[in-house]
Image 1 (cartoon, rainbow, N blue to C red):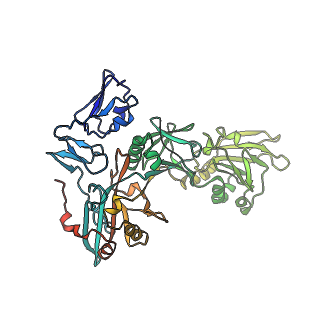
Image 2: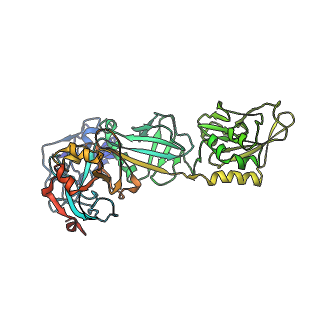
Image 3: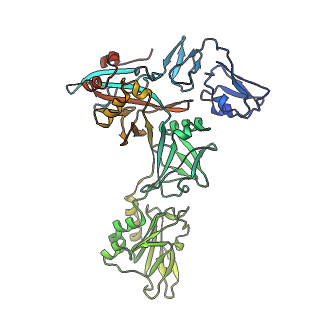
Length: 494
């Protein structure tokens, strides 16, 4: 079925052009115009608020219908479908990426990258390969599986505030995820998932998952929070500021690790941190190195001895303290000794300020000495570089199991029992306990640019199952479709 635009209804808003994966729609004189490379995927018919994009019964001349997913794109000569995987070459649809067969030892025999998809679920997987590995007859089954139960977990190494937990995360104004829990030295985002993928903005959700998983740079906005510029393997850019260091620990942990060094150069240290602020002299680590409480009171809520809860903000250590002098709330002059030096720094050691207590309780900022700076530099040297990491998460059901064996439950059991190894694009996965095959994989270990998406919408992941031939027969594998690995050496697409 071809897609046409009712020019009377079209308002030229451009939504269809922005969402079209093939860039097959142009806005000319405030009207949407369909281009020759339209694959009739139907995204425009689903996003148009004015019902101007509609299907017709007309069959596009020279188009071949793709059956690799439920969308069933109609692809004309020389062009690809919406997923960008299949191209019409001379009236035949071919996978337009070479099958990746060269992999390190210990992984699958071949990868699923470039393998294509067998759909519907009752069809065997695209490739079932056999070879002898360390004397064991081994089988790898591969498919590029559309997964509507999928998403990414984004780990952002930063002390900078990005927004409150559970805050919505948007791309181009559309909700694509939310801020998840804090982790040690990092902020976490949860992007995608079945409910968002099947929601009204599912197309941009799918595109965002794939962009992040493929290492593209993506700009996101946290509701009532920060603008994030994220790319796997690179430092995050938060509100225009590129972060450099991941904290060595919370303020209390920093005191614990470096109390001996700090004690030799200052009388007191306040380590600012958005979670736990540390106070050197009061902390048990300070006591351990021979210190007693200085009388200094930090500007934070007390938790336990030498440990205080900070408030998130845009200031030092991710707290709301933007002027280091404000880190000192008060001084008990019945305890404090005039002349003491008070260091204020962060858990990353990127900023430091030094203050001295006067006779009347007045506090004056003084230059940081060389010795004190060396101590701060030791803290910084123990911090790792800040970077963005992404875990692709998914659940393999449907064709991702039925294409392996006639009894899908036996595939699941083999994976959980350790008799079958699940990899994604050649990379090891962590399979979550419990029912089903729910997995996580570090996208930096996956073959580059391995993910795509279809406008079901769902993301497409390269899934591989590797097991012994004996086990494959036991679970009811499609043994009649097995081919020797040597047939795939230097494999080329037609």
